[in-house]
Image 1: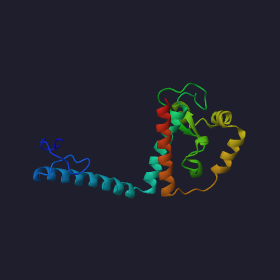
Image 2 (image 1 turned 90 degrees about the vertical axis):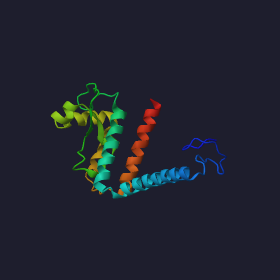
Image 3 (image 1 turned 90 degrees about the horizontal axis):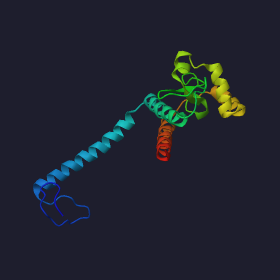
Image 4 (image 1 turned 135 degrees about the vertical axis):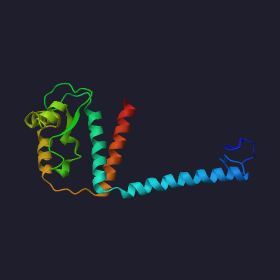
Length: 175
């Protein structure tokens, strides 16, 4: 086997040894290991420093990305026009005032920019479209859940992020 640093041939003493035991090569090896360990530790520290608000933003980004992926071949929930390349993940109940259902898939559907942004959600048409998609019973349940009070915990948000990252990867692997 050849040393990764000096390119000299050597006999490894350990399985998966990539550096010979010359002083210079050992120094390089040790420095690389220190960098790897620091990167791992930095990642953990960075994660621990995130506030609940940071996690909510991250969860919202990942969740909306999933909704866009899920609804990319469907029409706008409000106006029934085909969704273009750029469309929003429109909330029936706003995420600002209804925390309990911010990450509820029944509450969020692909919506064209015109309906979501220019018509402020086009809510009357949205209600008709959402009832067609999820049915009257689930819509009633959504109305009940919308008025519950919810404070997201760090663990719940981390779970939401992980869940939707997994769902995104699963959908991409199918496509």
